[in-house]
Length: 152
Image 1 (cartoon, helix red, strand yellow):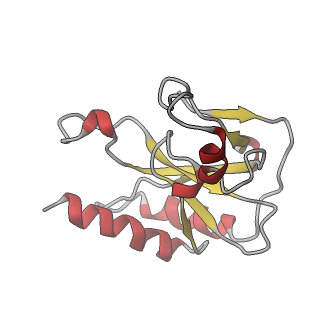
Image 2: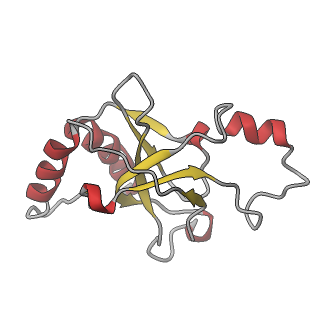
């Protein structure tokens, strides 16, 4: 399950997303696919990160550490704009099963810098998300690095 407190607030699609969606849809016809899916506005999910008590022990993880893992903004809401390549998590390491959780693509509409944030697994807090230029080729480079390591 995903660890997000959902909000009914709505975000308007950033200008760069339509181009990324079109490129991802076009790439699905090729043999090597990065399995990227970019949502349309009606599928956007606006949420803030919540620490799952089954994963994050409240006694072991003090509030000030949670603040740092959320970049000192635990109430900040992000918009999930898509998902992609499925990374192995602790249940799949070593990789014996197909991983279940695709990476989530997040966008912070309050940020002055256009960027996408990649959350590799559902339990990764914002401090562990990868900021990436909102460019399809940049995103493919990130995933191709993981794919080349996974193949060896």
